Length: 195
Image (cartoon, rainbow, N blue to C red; front, side):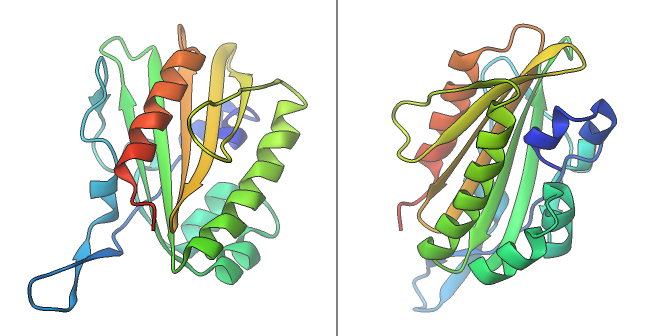
């Protein structure tokens, strides 16, 4: 499940998920060497501790998990048409466990596939923003964001595509703000190849 579903029910938070490996980089042998998708996520975020795989559904995500987490009735159809290859969810908490960050990373066979999924997410983000507020993100082309609440605490979500990847960044808890969510989104954007 993703951030925009987090605003619907706190119990859904426990279902947050995803991950795997699947992008590739050239090796000296001439054939691609698999690069774990998790390596395309921040290893650390200042003031936060990465949570073990399995916490709040984090870890690899196949297409079934990604579609279930998305929750939209057409998610499997859109992911399939977009050429979904894999996904990964990682989360971090601060030392007092009052703030939590999530990055759900999706990989596709092509940049055009990633754009299809980003359009799907942007539609959902815009619908969520109608019930909360819009979060403007400078520095990430085509990013869509919204603000809302989860269990009475702020919830900020940003989604964007870069190359053949789509990232959803979410921050929730006491004291989260647009600067934090945007900073984490910019960090993730910098880790993704543009092609």
